[in-house]
Structure formats: structure tokens, C-alpha cells
Amino acid sequence: MTDGELKALLHLVQSPDSHFLKVPSLPFHFLISILSKFPVDVDGRLLSTNNLRDNPRLFNLTYSALGLLMAGVGNAITEGSRLFDDLFQAAVTCQGIVSLI
Image 1: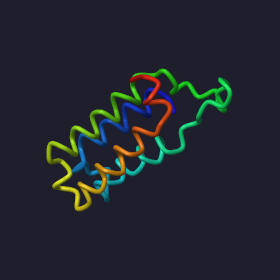
Image 2: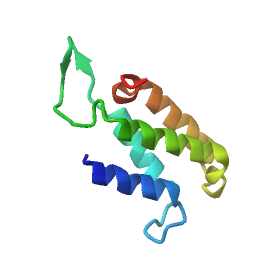
Image 3: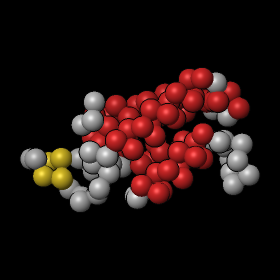
Image 4: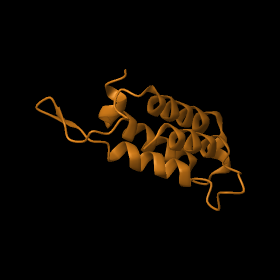
């Protein structure tokens, strides 16, 4: 993913009532999918040459999404508390996030 795509996803996460979204929870599910599929290190070698590793933008996007769900944006989304739990679990197991903490 490029920085532009991450910025667009951040915008959609921050604007769940955007006219671009038919399902307000979709950007959160997409972020969970990205985090859960992030490549891991095996014997110190990265399985993918993805430029998201060591990119704080992915961390910032995840942090913002968790904050929005905690602050109540999730109330507008019917599955807000479950989304928070799923996103938090994906974040703490994602090598791209863990390497930045």
C-alpha cells in the first residue's frame, strides 16, 4: 500500500458517515485485514519487500482508528465494541505495529 492509500483509508476511518461508504464499518474491517495479513520476519528476513514496515503511518492509522472507536464513533457503527476488540487484537499481533512500539 502506498502512503496515499493509507491517507485515504484514514480519511474514511475518520468519516464513517461519508457518502462514499454504504457500510460505515468497512474501513475498520479493511484495516483489520491489512494488519492480520502483514508479512512477518522469518529468521530475520522479511517475507515481503512491502514498504509499510517501519512506516509510522500504519501505526498512526491504527492508533487513530482505535481512538475513534473508543471515543464513541463506534456508537454510530452497530458493531463498535466488537470492532475495537478485533482491531486491537490485530494491532498487537501485527509485526509492522509491534516493531514501531
